[in-house]
Image (cartoon, rainbow over all chains, first blue to last red):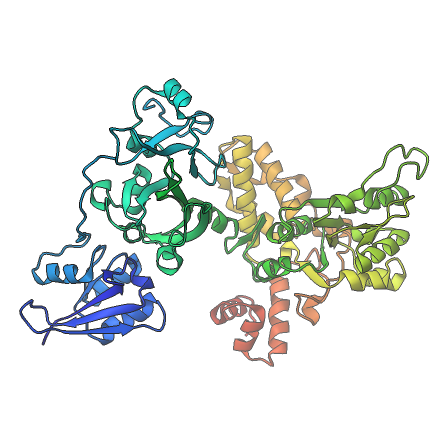
Length: 119
Length: 519
């Protein structure tokens, strides 16, 4: 069975807050070369409890998110869901890194060009 | 400037620091930083664009100040972003608060680092332009340790010398300590300075915050020493009038003439000796609360005047024809039975009706199950630290005697007994010999010396036999037996219902019934 990944969204980025995300992306299939199925779910309101419920009912294996409260993190881990939290950056890059097995909790996948002059 | 080790408002009062942005070689300053607010609560800054930097800088330092070192010394989380809200600088406190290091977050949009609910719902910076004032809002953040932290975020714009918007400066204050303090103030077994966890007191704690939000007159009744003054103060402190004055006056302490002048004030020359205008307590309590303690002792003539005030909120000082519209919430307190006084003609019925909008009856200590030990320990700890004594506690025998004592003077008496014992005790434990001698007098003598406590009013009390006057000689077991029997009668013998009436758990009721042989 193809693995399911859930990413709370904030525009094109991984949502900074798990509990405040009103849009989530569910990706089925974990291989870059595999044709993966993507669907975006718009939640009626932001709620960490509802999101946890959705994760369990959708049988999500991995959650890639930004800030998440310890309570919900522990709950999901207890329910055997892999949680990669404190991820910062566009969701495509985060997903690509995950599919390359190169994504760790706390990773920042933003590309930022350093200014030439020092502040 | 690196010599400024601490963020001390006094030290930096006249200091302005240039802030350099990209063009460091030409020394094109983005502005100057100087404290805008000296309040302890908010540290925000303004960037002064007036061309005043030369004298300041010459006096301060010959070379540019290193911005990072400067902001690192500020004990409030702080970061600077560019116009697109990407982080440029972050101070040490902010690193500690968020858990992100400065090297990793440079160039990241601030919402991903701060992770504040404001960023997602209603970012205050989005609509800011160069003329915007600083905005301060309370919110919460989730840090890298997955902790939800209440914060106050203050956002301000940064401008260059040409008045162009160059970025934003945000400060983030951790409000955890403040919230904890507030929580401690209103613990489950206490409200303000009131302590107790008996069902009767819990009911009062539940109702007090609700009462505080209204402006209705309150009448607090209860035996002497039950804490009427504390309740009045707690209502004031929890109300919208908390920032206004809380004025207290004892209606039984002054003769009628003086009391009138004291309450309503007087005009210069109103009577012999009135050499100045006097504002009176009502006027002093304007926009606040006036607590009339021992209101049962208020003379009849003044009762009429108080009645007039309660009707139209206007006071007329003695000798004055001009009234003053006073915005005062009146709280009355008495240990007397006002209903009985009305029947005897010593208290105006109409005044009672006006005061009796909300009534709180404070139970005597003998009816506050479980509170005796809590209060005794509280006073013991308090007095121990005050008198710097090293006493471990009460001996079991002492506690037994104290538990059996009916405390006609209620909590005040308990406190006095504990204070006496802590003063007298020279050993490790408070023993029987450290208690006041009158505690060992025969119950008959104590009862004879005891004045009959007043009848209890209806509010927050259950009707029926258990509402009869508390007998000072009655033990707690007797009171408890009465309470249980009364509740069982009301519940028609159904224990579940009786337990609910008493506010106890089912098993507590069964245990107590077994203990009292009420099967």
